[in-house]
Length: 74
Image (cartoon, rainbow, N blue to C red; front, side, top):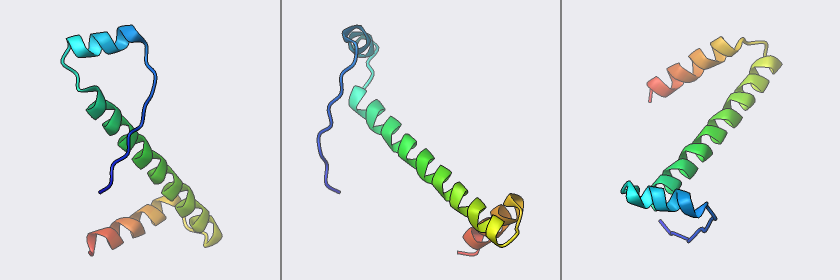
């Protein structure tokens, strides 16, 4: 895995409070970004599944069931 540096600006008071509370700012920001990317990917997958479901006349619940069964069979 290759790492790069990303910088951002935050209010000075916020950073000072984080440090006072022993918060690992890098880890919190890294985790927040990972969670947001995952959320967006899942949202896009849901949209794509719904689009497919509409084109083949399946309900979103039926698509979810099919996906779940496929995932469980692995």
